[in-house]
Length: 547
Image: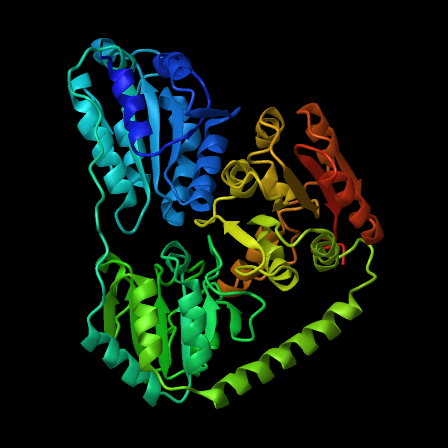
């Protein structure tokens, strides 16, 4: 058998049914052989970064391995930013790239480079297959490492001549590996005692709560013990229902802001994440001086990684939270306080929103209110709303009715790129991609993929015609570094010329509509849902300087 057969057999043995890629010459052996593997679909993209972005959210939405195939050094270079996003997302991914013939490696061939070194900083493991005899072992190990906690991408370079070499080493599966243990009773008892003795405990939940299928048990713990739940600033999944009385919103971008949310709590329970991701430096502690800090993780690698803790426990999260719930005291008074706090916050938000209701251009909140009202309950949200993320949280039932998939790491363009991956994984539900206009232009080629594969995606672009998040960050920079300035925002407007998303979409086979009046949104969405395939909805909303 040839190396290419072992490669594809390895994918098949590990349950892979989709490859996200952009074709190139060194991928010819794989592409040509795929004709003999009808159970593995090739999802075609026009840019390598977009293919990896789709594989990233596909891995999240399908609860399986995302596989993406790149093309030599420039193609891998195109994909590095999106691979970084997969690393921050803890997405189990096998990234491959075709490489030039190793017999001309030292001659500096066209498109050649050290692919292993290029990928190494943004993956868990990076390797090149040097001989077809290595293919089976490397592929089995790649899948194993991608799924070890914390999960993430690995990279395998596939030289064209190695794919054509003969080998007798057939593909194999490493077997069903149990890589998660359970927490000890004594450690959970200690945690329960701290919670029971606390006057004001709080939880911060990370994405691993969803990956470990522990959201329901987290809700049960929160409800019994009367504990509010925060999420981090950027989330790949929604670990706690956004419409629950105990949901306490996302944390801020630095330790001072995080302390503003957690500083009044005497026990802080961190569950299932890499705590904390900061945007800005702050010398403050995220906790009160006397706070006791508990951390529960699926595996040991993240325990006390960035901050000291009083108790750190590695164990399967659904099991840990279920057993912990049985040990904590019922706290009806704390439940009532959380409900009162939620009602007060909702009332205050309703007043602010009412004052902005009839603005022209419409606010992102008003636009998303109309979008949410027009969508079916089974809509799946692929989100990169950034500065409108709070508006998404308030309008959609994330983590309960509406499935949610986001992208971590801060690199933009992941929402539009990832939406086709979500649609491939969730073919029977409408997928709604929410993105800013600036972010979408990093991966606008994904529209062609959506049209080519007839994916049911509603692309909702919030067109404020600026990089709004950068304008917010300029304000932050000037304040934090005392760089007082009356200068305008530099190079952050997208208005000269104004981009036409409906024209771009039409050029890639996607129908659409531009809407500037909130009363027209429902009709446009009805048109989108009544047809097969993708639809572009360009919503003109206010920017930072058009208020």
